Amino acid sequence: MAVLTARYISRINGELAHMSPALDAMTAGFRRARLVAAIIAALGALTTLRTANVRGEEAAPAVEPRAESVAV
Image (tube, rainbow, N blue to C red; front, top):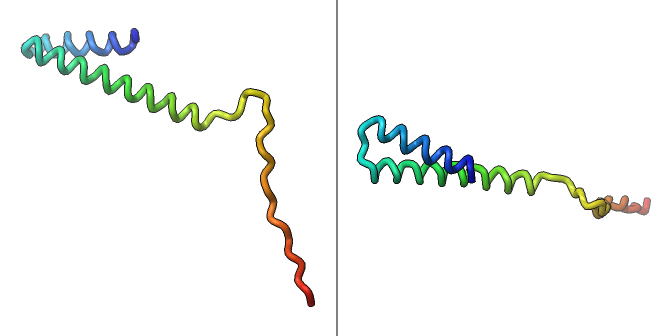
């Protein structure tokens, strides 16, 4: 939350420094904060998908293909 708020305020201050109207500055700030939130959520999802099982449960054994016997 602090990161999003910091990005929001930073973007608003930047827009206001360039003489943008206050409502446009706030909209730009919200857009930037949503972008940062989406990036954080995507990184969290990727981390979740790529993290190994840490609960101590053993992973299911891999099934090895059986060698078929061929009659000669």
